[in-house]
Amino acid sequence: MRVLLALSLLINLIFISWNYKRVSEIASRKVKEYANPDWETVSFRLQRDALLKRLPNHNNQVVIIGNSHVQYFEWAEACGNPNVKNRGIGSDVIQGVINRLPDVISDSTRTLIIEVGINDLAKGKSPEYLNEKIVQLIRVAKSLQPSIKVVINSIFPTSNLVQGTKQPLSPLIIKTNEFYRKAAEQNDAVYVDVFSKLGDENGLNEKYHPGDFLHLNADGYEVWLKELMPYLKQ
Image (cartoon, rainbow, N blue to C red; front, side, top):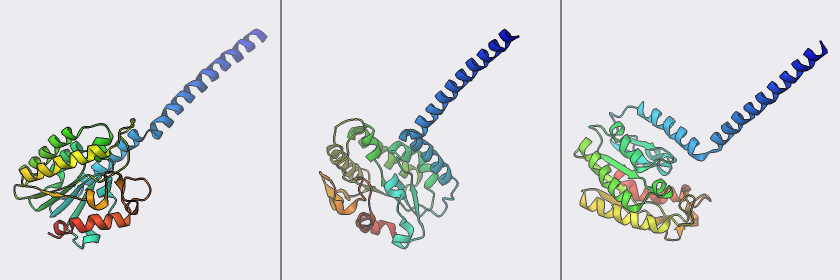
């Protein structure tokens, strides 16, 4: 009897030990998943994209689309035009914007304002890749609405590095902006140089960012808004 009891206790201890180890492993993986910026970014982008797809597009006269720089500002209220639609998604990349164009452009869309590219460069994409994609973006937009005015913003300056490297983003941004300027010129689009208004090759002017050297504060948005106002009011 004692032998059976001891054996039973031993088996239970082994089971409890194995189960504890298994639960700990699962919990550890979950913590890593939730702490992983890429996982959080993908989840957020999918949720935001699903939300925007449910919004009507029949009155999208002016659409501003891009990444967090676009999303984090109240464009319609700031410019006084309720027909401006904010279609920014934090951390979005240029292919993501291209994929979303059919959902945001309608027969009523007169102006498409685009701000995208910094996340591609930060993830290791080349200026040449963005050059190819910005031309594709312009052409897709015009295929959806032939009379649309496409406005391409320069990528903002930053002193940040390419993720996982010591390579500065600034030279890549400057090269990409020159590609954007030429692409707009050659494809009947408009290029807006915000780069030189917000900073230089050393990054954003300290007056215009909240401390992360990447995003804009209220003063930074005021500068950008001034540059875009002629197109937001249309």
